[in-house]
Amino acid sequence: MREIAFIKQNKEKWLNIEQQLTVKNKISAEDWSQMYVQLSNDLAFSQTFYPKSELTQYLNNLAGSVHQKVYTSYKYEKNALSKFFFYEVPVIAYQYRKVLYFSLLLFLVFVGIGVLSAAYDDRFVRLILGDAYVNATLDNISEGDPMAVYKGSSNWGSAIGITINNLFVGIRCYIYGIFGGLGTFYIMFNNAIMLGSFQYFFYEKGVFNESIRGIWLHGSMEIMAIVIEICAGFILGSSILFPGTYSRLQSLKIGFKKSFKLFISTLPFTVFAGIIEGYVTRYAKEMPNFLNYIIIFGTLALISFYYFIYPIIVNRKIQNKQII
Image (cartoon, rainbow, N blue to C red; front, side, top):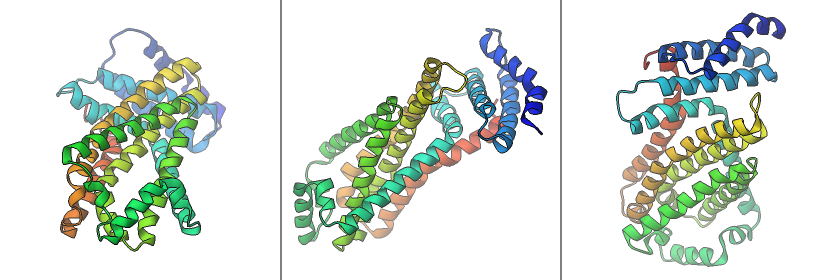
């Protein structure tokens, strides 16, 4: 079907939905859900046949606005906190899933660049991590305990200090998105390069397995939370750069509201990762291998499921009207 014919066929429906968004009449959650299903179908058609058209952007924005109406009209059986984590955040994660996939892919690319840079330049690790840290780690390796850096203070002291540092990194990943996403890109680049060179350093010194068992006990959840925070920063930035049919200020308001909720949702994961790093990582060497890997893959599976799989489940329930 030609785009103009598609528009002519559905224009009245879309304009009616736009009008419903502006009036204060009470509309049931079921009606909003039905509108969302219709728009989702139209958006899927437009993305398939007119992927670069302004129509696709228009329908995406319209569907996003109706999504908001669905969950604000939705009578959740539990408290507001449950609604936030089990409905609102998954809806936002699904709506911006492409940004999430892009953030993860870009982060991994820069981790790979960090690995290659460290592999081909002996000075690179010292440049990124600093002489003091490298020398201290070399001493720990020579003494047979590469992860001794995690035993430098008390359990609670480490947990609090590490959590505060990780929260600060996450805040910067998100809030720097206000600069059109460039600030988020810069913070992501630095952290990904550091991670890649840091991990290669342990590989080069022959203690790769020890580093995996220690670092990724907390790192699997910590790093994935940072990726989500990067995604939130990119959403904030894109709302400024690509307002679509909205004014730039309207787009920023919508982008901030959604991205901030996504950012806030990472905080429990960041705190939990800090607790693991402060209380558990210091015992990585003494722990059985199977227990190390249960924690590593268990925490990774938990956060990955919540942001990548659960949003798909919630979206399917919305389309089938199972949660309205």
